[in-house]
Amino acid sequence: MARKSKGKTARKSRTRWMFQLIAAIALVGIAFTAWFWWDMREWRPSAGLYPEQGAYIATGLNGVRYATIKATGGQFVYLELREASLTPDDQFANRLAQAQAADLKVGIVLRFDPCLRADPQSARFTRMVPRSANLLPPAIALGATAQDCPETVSDAAVQSELLTLVNQVEMHAGSPAILKLSEDFEQRHRIANVIDRDLWLERDRTRPSYAGRPWLLWSANRQLVNEAVEEPIEWVVVQK
Image 1: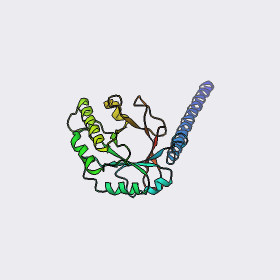
Image 2: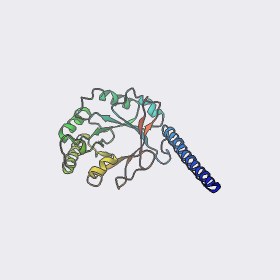
Image 3: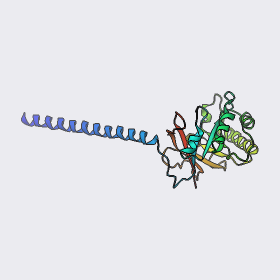
């Protein structure tokens, strides 16, 4: 009986030890997650490695103080133009004027909708964006994939309409477009090696490699807390 009692005691001791170990690992994980979240609020890549840095301003961000972006180390901003499937972007001209008045370099991002033909999308861009040599090269954001379309759209159709849109935007802007390519879009449609344009990739803190070739722009922190706006913004750096 004594041996059985000792065996039970040993098993209980091992069980307690295992629970304590699991609890300690969980606690470390929670602490690391909290630290990482807090650190990412203000983290930016080194200015020594990436001297040119700026911000991507989505259409939903209101009350942006562009002069503060400039004062806190931003040299440029890319402003998102509301996509063609949505209501007209009445505040776009005002946002553009404010960004330029803050002495920032300014570029425009048009979000590609794989469910729409190229023509109405490029029409939104050509109506809203002035032709100006002072603007940075335009960017086309590739995020939503064709699997979300209400009707089936083939990969070939997506590639065809995207290439048409790129050409139409470039004709208006007078400079080659940049593809703001999400990892989901690249995995679904494999565009990086089909359309030969500079790439803008996205990955918090870690240099992205999912396109399989070098990139020009990197969204290094998509949750940066900045005095320029109440909500987090997307911080972008330029590859030397």
